[in-house]
Amino acid sequence: MKQSDVSSMIDNDRPRRLTILGSTGSIGVNTLDVIEQLGGRDSFEVMALTGNGNLDLLAEQARRTGAKLAVTADESQYMALKDLLSGSDTDVAAGPSGLEEAAAMEAGWVMAAIVGTAGLAPTLKAAARGADIALANKECLVSAGPLFVDAVKKGGGRLIPVDSEHSAIFQCLEQDQRHALERVVLTASGGPFRTHTREQMANVTVQTARTHPNWSMGLKISVGSASMFNKALEMIEAKHLFDVRPDQIEVVVHPQSIIHSMVGYSDGSVIAQLGVPDMRTAIGYALTYPKRPALNVDRLDFAKLARLDFEAPDETRFPALRLARTALVRGGLQGAILNAAEETAFNAFVEDKIRFLDMAEVVETVMDAMVEGVPADTIADVYAADREARRKATEVIAKR
Image 1 (cartoon, rainbow, N blue to C red):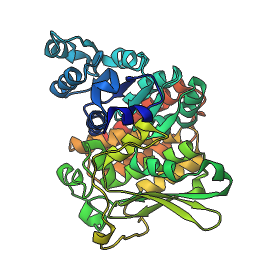
Image 2 (cartoon, rainbow, N blue to C red):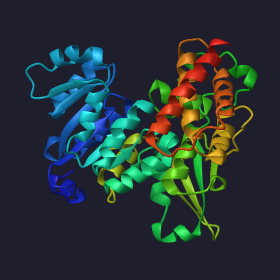
Image 3 (tube, rainbow, N blue to C red):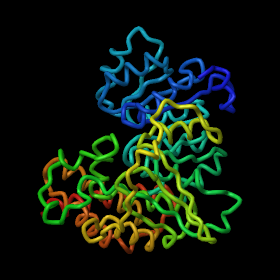
């Protein structure tokens, strides 16, 4: 792509300043690939990159992009990262304060891709100062939905979804037709256990659960796809992203992952977004919105598409979807409670403390135990509910 073509797509001053919170994960790596495709340092100035355990990759990314700041979330790894970046012009920070320092840097566009609740504080920081937020972190909306949306509005930036499903809805949702919006339909691949019985899923391993049939993703998201907790979180996200009622949110299993999601209107029309399963498409759209970039990704060959299948999800085999609907109906802090309990249960599954099917049971037990909680009036309420849900989930796990 010509440099002039790239420049015409980007509204801010050249080079455009950006930060990637979570640059060493799959979303972060793909974001850097898109940046390279769209001109690299000639078009973008990387202000900050953050990572967790993969220090070698973080240091390599910082050197390659000329990042002003590199942050490891692990405070104990500060000196190790500093040594890796010795002789470079990149400053180094670590821990929660380092993440907030990265978020505070003057970048007009921030990729929020830190997995888990750890991503909430730095993303809020970036939103409060008015950055456009490309949101890949699910927990910001699941745990703190209205509060997070309000922070983005008050800051004056834009909230652009990066999840393939929400990006698809975002692209299909005609703003001048909001009055005619009838439903949003999230597609789900069904994961590696789509056709498994509960008996077959009872003793699956982490290695089996992390193998996704269509997408290349990190461990947390891959296991979440297998359990359909990813889709559960996406249902809650959709409510806050698109200001829809719980009964307007549908899920359909689509094994091929070609249709990424759909929007239904009051005249019976359904508009869908299609593409090969490649996160770079949604990332590129978020980076250049409202324009579209030219990306080196595979194109759909409709003549070779043998079929597109759809089926209703089974909420008995995959109770995460039912739990999401429960959280949506109950409201308040139930999203934060579901998320915290699920993260705790996921870690216990990875550590071989509980079985695959136990994760949903742990989450439901904690949600029911905290159903009479306080409303989600402040971020402090969210953090308090998060801590209590993790404590209760740990207790439930210890008794199994």
